[in-house]
Image 1 (tube, helix red, strand yellow):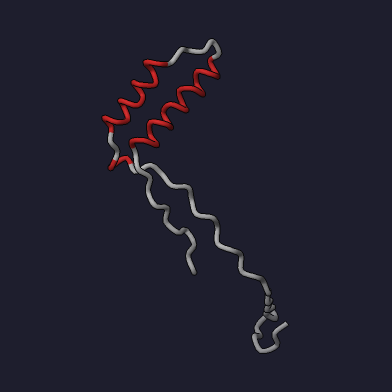
Image 2 (image 1 turned 90 degrees about the vertical axis):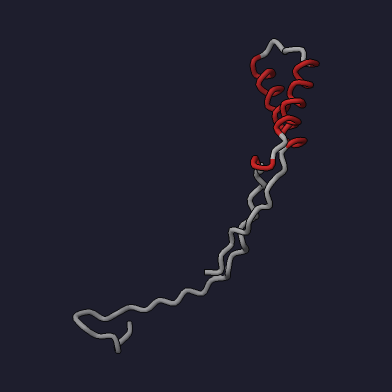
Length: 89
């Protein structure tokens, strides 16, 4: 209890001693679509599709298409530099 901060009730002061947490990890890089080479992207997907033999399983088809899109994006779209989300305040 703090006897100098008086009024109808006594004020309570609390002191917490805590260690600072480490900064959170940086976010993963994102695609910079403004600098994409869309022709190369389309060519990569067309190359994949021309050699692709569809699977019978819908889940496998989904996985194959997702992989093809990611592969084409890796070749044709640069990534951004992630910013630091840790603020001192």
